[in-house]
Image (cartoon, rainbow, N blue to C red; front, side, top):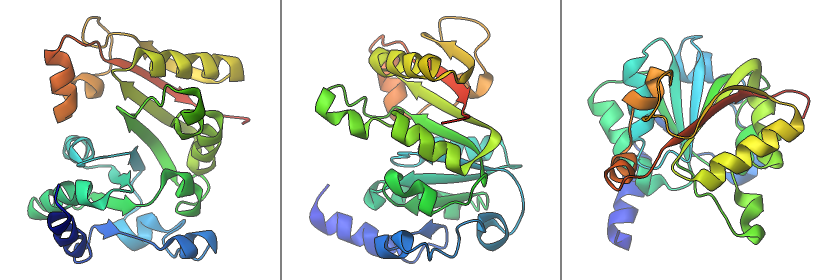
Length: 226
C-alpha cells in the first residue's frame, strides 16, 4: 500500500465515530477515559464485550458482530490503515455493536478495566516461530497474564490458526500452567463437534489457506491464577 493511500486512510479514521486511537502517553499515565467505561460511554449499553486481537482488515470482527447483535465487538490492531476497511463498512452498514481500537496489544490492560471483557479472539496471528521472537507470540505467558487482567473470571479466549506450531505451543503452555481448556481441535473442518462460530466465520486468508489444503486449528480456554 502506497504512503499516500495510507495517509488518506489515517485521516479518514480520525473522522470515524467507531475508531478510537488513544495516545501512548495517555495509556501509560492511566488516563484513558474509556477504561472500565466501554459499555456505558462507547456502546451505550451493558452488553458483553468481545475483542479480536490483531484484527487486520476487521472482517472477522464484523462477521462476529453480524452473527450476534447481543454482544459488542472491538477489533484491536496497531495498523489503522488495515482496519480502515472494517470501520468504514461497519458505519455504512450501521453496525452499532462494532468498534476499532488502534493500540499495541501490549497495552491492553491500560485500555480495559479488570473483568471488563467477556471473550477474546486471536485469529491467525504470526506464530513468531524463531526463539528471539517468542516475546511477540500472542499466547506467551506475559500476554496470557494481560488477558486475564481484562477478562471476567469465566471469560474465554479463542485461538484460531493455521499454524500447528502455534496451536501446539499454546496447548503445551496451557497444560503446563494448569489452565482450563474447553475445546481443542487440530482440524476444525475435518471433524464433528466444532462450535459453529468457528467454522461459519472465515477471513479472506483463511479461505486461501483452506484452498491450499491447510488444516485450521482451534482451541478455547479460560485463565486463572497467572
